[in-house]
Length: 145
Image (cartoon, rainbow, N blue to C red; front, side, top):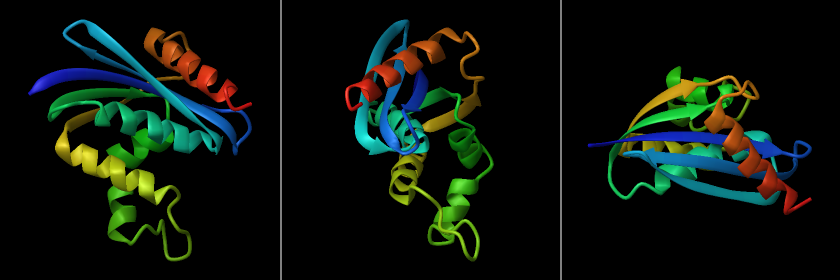
């Protein structure tokens, strides 16, 4: 399996509001940048969209080292929350539905296709790839502002 590094970030102006996401894929020293956005969304949806779009860009199953500053994304994957929500018919508990189930469904399927190691990085702390992804995400969000 090819080893790929993926860095992602999402941004939202207001929550909800115009949002964007950015991702950097790195394989064998070659980088590819991806970005996109929506007119009316949330920060968490943009964080998820960044990861989903980056993983969907991979043409074959890969070993992925994923770096995100989103505790929502990292904890839901690393601590098994998202799988538990899916097993409970997209409920967080008996009264609360899980948010963004259609995005989590896509992401969990991608995590079954690839071997994904999820790493949390502190946002806005000078991490070069995270800072670049943030700039991509903010630029996309501004297109809808």
